[in-house]
Image 1 (spheres, helix red, strand yellow):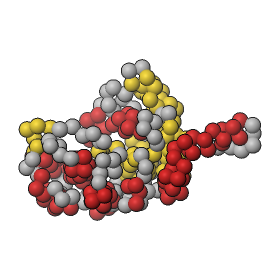
Image 2 (cartoon, rainbow, N blue to C red):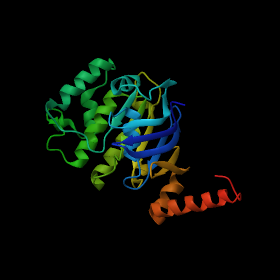
Image 3 (cartoon, rainbow, N blue to C red):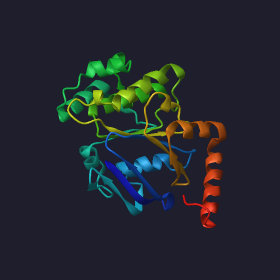
Image 4 (tube, rainbow, N blue to C red):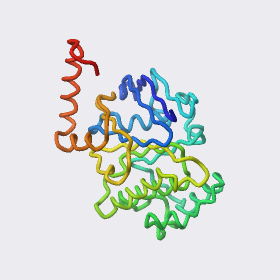
Length: 258
C-alpha cells in the first residue's frame, strides 16, 4: 500500500472528528471519499497532511512504508504528499508565477509552467497574487496548477467540484484526470489520489477504483464508484446510513457478516 490508515481516532479541541477509521490506497489507485457535511471528510485530509490542530489519539498513518502519524507537515510533503484545499488561502504579495518557479527549481522537474497554466486557462493569471480576487472555480484551478507543478505521489483533493460552475467543471475534471495519470509525472510513477466530494459529480471525469462513504468520522461502506454514486444521488446519505444500520443489526443477530 502507498497509504495505509489503521484505526485512526482524531480530535480537534477535544471534539472527536474521526473514530477508529481504516482506509488504504494502493500505488496508482484513485478513490472517492463521499459523505454529508460534517462527516469527517476534510478532517481526514487534515489528519493525513499533519495539521497541528488535529490531535491523533489512536491509530497510525503509514505512507510509503514509513510511519508519518506524528511527522511534521513539511516532511510529509517532502515524501510526496500533495493537497488541494477546499478553501485555499489568499496570499498577498506573491504571484502564481513566482511560487511556481520556486517549486520547479526545488523539484528540478523541468515542468513547463506556461504549458500547465494554458491547460487550465490560467495564462492570464500567472502574474496575479495567489487567489486574491479569484472566484471559487478559479481558486480550484490554481490549486490544481500547483499540484501539477509539484507532481506528488499521493494527491489529496478536498471537494474540487464544490463551487465550480458547469463551464469550469470540465476544465477542473480534465485537469484532475491528467494530474492522476502518467502524463503528469515526467520522472516518477503514476500517482495515487483521494478525491473528497459531496455528490460525486467529479467521478464523471476521473477514473476511480472504489468509493468510500464516511459518516460521523467512520467508514460505513465502500464499493464500486458508479453504483455507490448513483445510490447516493437517488437515496441521499440517509439511505447509506439506514443500509449500514440494517447490516449492523443483521450482524448482531448472526445472520451475516459485514
